[in-house]
Image 1: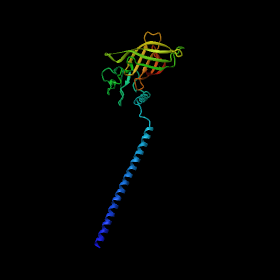
Image 2: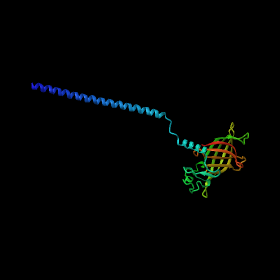
Image 3: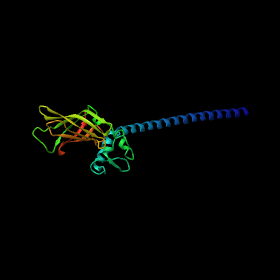
Image 4: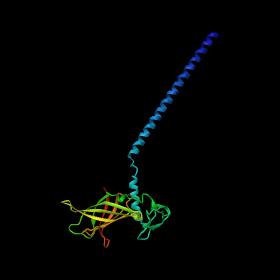
Length: 244
């Protein structure tokens, strides 16, 4: 009798142990399946995020941002008196004479007048060429040019007058677009660091045109240029110059 009872107890214990192991296995499989489903969902969400990211526009080009800021500054104005006064920039307004820029001595409170970028000679490096399409407003004749190319052939900066770079160059005018006839005239002038301003006048030329270019577009590869009569500074036309 006791033997039979012990046998029943042993069988029940074995079944209970088997059931527990089966439960553990089932629970483990459930956890694994649940984790796999969770990983699949995460992978699917990540894939959707990647697709949405690809549809987003690319980060703005830093050069484009500089050009945009330059346009805003051109619209706002300098806040300085007309003539030779130039803003120092920064949060505290200050204007100084353009002759004090890049002369080797800091005159702006923030030191921007001696900033290496401001004092770069890149606009007038020998060999620099700029081209544009002229829009004429006056001074027109039947052979007036349309396409124009400005090329710097020499530059010289004196230690005793560092705020200017003296240049020589040539201006090439396309006078006959159909037959590609070009007139090339020698010019001379200077570059003003404070105003980022390039001035060129005829050098023993029979033509009475000069060119002024202001690098106010956020870099030294583009400028707003004007064709003028040097004696009166009368504006004959303008063009957007691009380095090439």
